[in-house]
Length: 92
Image (cartoon, rainbow, N blue to C red; front, side, top):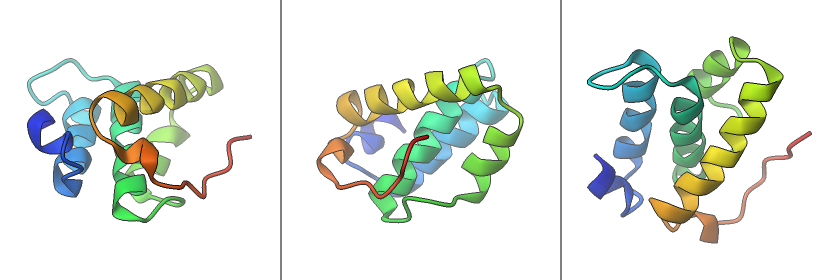
């Protein structure tokens, strides 16, 4: 999945979110899950509201969300070239 994600493969990014959310072969990590879901949204052009990402965020603390935003930047920079795409998200 990581190899496909590096090529901005949308389903791979979404799947990696689920992998970390539900602990499929890895320990559950809501922060990484949120980051992959968020990167998927940017790559898929659905930047903004997203069911899985938003549902996950509802159970996270503010500190976890801030950390997830940082991890999402790392994911975009190191796993994809999604950072080249314009974002419409506003971070409060």
